[in-house]
Length: 353
Image 1 (cartoon, rainbow, N blue to C red):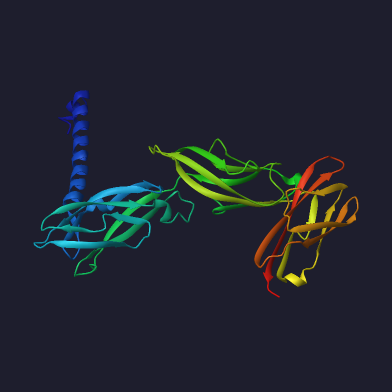
Image 2 (cartoon, rainbow, N blue to C red):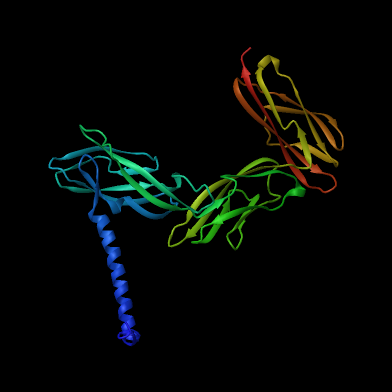
């Protein structure tokens, strides 16, 4: 080594050695890949699929991932496949029927919904996935050794709280930002959010680590439900990776209706009785029935105090079977001039006398 030491220190020699190491590494990787390609995975009926076609590697959580793989009939007799079965409903095969002559090879297309295969359970942004699929062969049934597809699925982001974000009960004083932590994959470089209602604003912080939901004054009173869509761009994926969530909650105005909903149960036509609803507020307000309200209902004001109203609601039009009606009451706060619309819902089942 002392003899060759000075010679090995020359730049040109070091470059040649580096190139030799790289060439050996490429050759080893090539041989491993070639081995997977040349070593098919058979089943007991003599049908073969290359091992490389069953290892899908690293995938993003995409609703449609498609691979074309080859099936070879290693037998001396033809084989007719009537169908394919899988342990996961996320997998689809086309075509589902084919005939393979002796030593013949044909291609099938496998499409996988990677959003339906599960998710990470320990805040990791990836998980291992595998599923078995099997051909149903005419006159022979299913082989006892199915093929196994495996992959590592990468999740663009994880959100605490599941698929539903409950904002709870909110008053005008508590309409404020609510924050949820985001566990974003390191390869995600862009997130976009949209909400199905203008009453709820959504955005992601610049570091992609927090989701902020902002209820606004445009939210209607009462319970609400909105769709939240979060899209991500990750790695070399050119398409958006999309997930859909629900935002729910209830906005409480300064005026409360007691009760909010009238569930009358079974009602006969000859036994209709007026129902009483109280409207209450901490400050004076005025009210009137909206002109577009349900014509099957009649409203009568029994008491009209500054801060409390007592209403009598009657069924003018009765119908047989299940019925849902809604009475819209417009209220206005005397001190601030702000207007609110209160829905009063009446549900019943019309029974014959």
